[in-house]
Image (cartoon, rainbow, N blue to C red; front, side, top):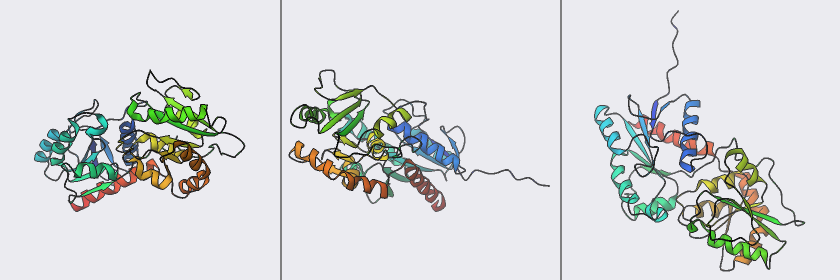
Length: 324
């Protein structure tokens, strides 16, 4: 009797190899996507040593850990003319405070058959500089690992206790929004004493002295998710975020978001699941708390998820291959 071996749906090469532990949002993205595709029958590799049907290219050059870039993809396309390339763009110069990323992404895009941006804001930023928005592309928001980041068992706020706000950052750069977190801290130490708590997870500038904030060392995975679920609302004032994983983690733990208008791609999620900081920070905090149940219900009705993110990439890859 002839026994047929299961063949993979397709072979995909992703140029960012997953690492154990917390290595930022890009590592979460590639870990989830690799696991999702393998579960759905794809063969996943992270190099171009053998023929693949499609490649997924991200972080093309200015980060440690990528296994190939645009030059290698271009050479592979010459060897295998039917090879297709999805280019994921999740960064820019304004956020990194550099002058190399935009040009690198522009040059790398020459090998892309399809481009994914992690927010509409980031697409529009690059479209104003170099990206032709008539090219095939999509916006796919970041999603966190649902094995850890979920709302089940999360704290519920009632008017009898303080409303717990939380934020978390691996970087101690002031651009992560620490000017706003400092001002919230001062309000809680003063006129809003007893009404709110502010929890800071991760790192913060060495010259920032907290008056009332409760600080926690860096955490990841289940430990981080448990800390987030112990709070009631998330706050992000990080400037020019293309599509922040820390925001996805907070939202997926059931926390509505209070956000700064200059948080880049975060604004798109904030409009759906939260409240923008207005001219008066104190009034914004009070209104955010008042409308907390409304935003929490929106999260419950249409929750973000890493599974949805990975499935969106899978659908794009399938279309690339069926249209080839």
